[in-house]
Amino acid sequence: MSYKISCLLFAKNNVGEILLIQRKKKPNRGYWSPPGGKLEMDIGESPFECAIREAQEELAIELQLEQLRLFGYVSEKNYEGRNHWLMFMFNILPVLDDLPLEIGEGHFNFFTREQINNLKIPRTDHQLVWPYFDKSHQGFWGISANFSQEVPKIKIEAKPF
Image 1 (cartoon, rainbow, N blue to C red):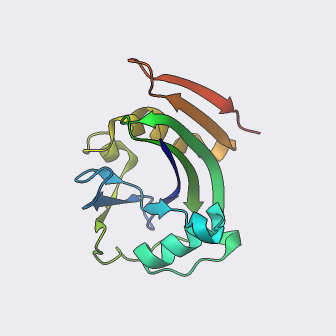
Image 2 (image 1 turned 135 degrees about the horizontal axis):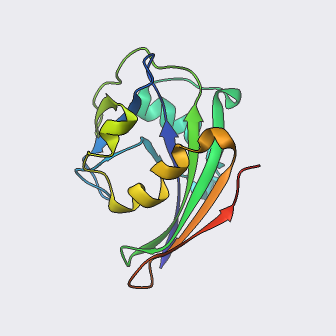
């Protein structure tokens, strides 16, 4: 089973709504999720380099390292029986003034945190992403989920510090 490494970007507008993209491609086609993408491992790209590149490609914004705050990771074993995933979660510190233009990956919209709970989002995001996004101000989180079992086993690997 292959291992996929990616970053998720959490950006807000000036009223605190969170930017999501409705994906046109797998995984999660048709679902709303934070923008982001896979690391280019063949060139040795770091998670921070990936976040900066994805922000430029998907959101058309140029970020500097100090404009990102890594607040956690999610490790998923045997996700959908196809891959293992390691996702680094970044808050984008600059506020976005405008909605990014639609791209080949999908179209964007801003949502309140409460609205996100009622959107079509990946099932596991309810358990693994959003509860820890809500706690991102508390420090760094590490979450592991093993989907090899019928009922996924989820554990906290790193607590905020």
